[in-house]
Image (cartoon, rainbow, N blue to C red; front, top):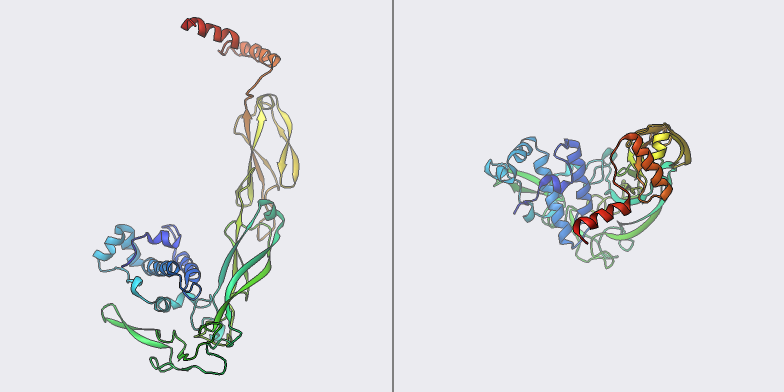
Length: 382
């Protein structure tokens, strides 16, 4: 049955997302959970089907409008229900949305420049500190990709044997399939050969006929200064080779590796674009009388003049002490918000001075500690 989960939640997008954001979100999930990359993983296959269903609805303006107003029931009640992807073969789902993968690595048989076959893109994540955002850094990343089987050179057939023409599709790799109660027909990947046009009778022992085997890969990635959390660095040609149905020997363009950067939260600074915000504690005497203080910045301590009479929550700006812009390199500013701290403990002299000051303000303050508690005891007779 179709999913009952929220389609926006499935794709990880806001309800205000535009068509390109919807397409990009689906494309990323399809790459991540595609059955070719998750063989035998039922959970990944289910997520792949849910993503396909969500995309089918949200990419259609009319269906999306109905869904936004009435939810899943509205779609079923108005003849706009989603396909039941739970009963479909994942390869068929992929072929239905083949157009959005052209040029990005998702096409199962092509998608590269000038008709070249192109492999899948991959994605991984790295974590960096705010200090590393300032100057840039390098990170070693390790990932696993499906690569050409060295035993059969991608054919999937045992060395010494050859694949045979698929009897189901006649070697075409595609078959026609009825859709929506036979109202129209669509061309999908042949379920017998997976779109290759050939079937293997004697499987390669290393890859079991798939023509691809998982291989570990490690490389160093340069992260530029000023990168934002969630932005990705594209490493060209570090993705997978074209799928077997497009090119068994892997001829064509490799996909790319997308390294998503996660910036760790900092204990002192809050980031706003290229600017930083710092909450700086000061004493009430510094606020009242004014002071010269040292502010911690990513470049080291810098002086700041706090004028007399500064109020709690007042903001100051230190130019050029923020983070560099990713494109232009110009640094943002550091905003310093002062927080006036009230001391928890006072010496006898400090308390005496403050009480004397309170009399000049004509403000009511609590009596001295000993006298106050004596009155409390007298009140309750203990």
